[in-house]
Length: 267
Ligand SMILES: [Zn+2]
Image 1 (cartoon, rainbow, N blue to C red):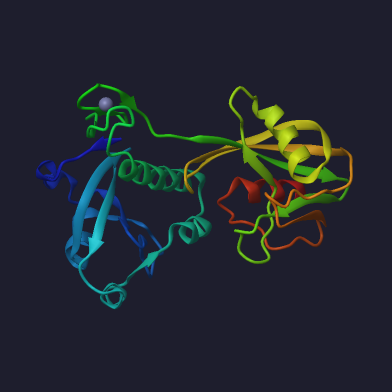
Image 2 (cartoon, helix red, strand yellow; image 1 turned 180 degrees about the vertical axis):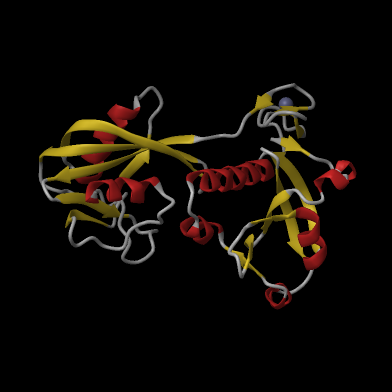
């Protein structure tokens, strides 16, 4: 991830593909539904004010502000999509991964302005994602919070749960953060036990995903039910239960590992 300072933004970048982030979400072309857009033509056409520009894998990640109304954008064939809705509409893992990276990078870049040890300003290193404190030289790298997600299966049923902050009607697999000193496998067993009181076996790795809301790194597992009755930890969950694979509730976005875990059981 390279930071490009504005004066260095020469004409060689004018037709580069760019992702435009505003405070309201990501810019999308209405007709094509594309969010990777030519840098300079889009900037000029929509009169966007640049805040920051980064370069990653030949794509510009642009933070900008609207200087005109949403109606003005719409008349010119564009709209702004919130990040989660855009991710849900994407096809292709590499596109999804790039946008996940860009979202997480911009959020961390904005959050980490000062050294947590001495309080001085930090600056990004030119050719790296590292930031360094100007006073004490302490290094900072983007922060991830590792978490596990476990989909428990019992014959033709899967265990799904919802927390109070989910959208109404939506359910997902059991998830929780990995404790310090703990392995992902131990965390999977512990989270299922703590949140719903069940014992599981046959834990198998499914896959992983960076999920930048705000900075999770999800490690997905499948598991088989062994014993126990569901006892919901009301501090963590609003509801949990067994769902037949033929009658599933509303599920998370296709872009999430949770949805991919659930859909793998339908195959
Ligand atoms: Zn410092």
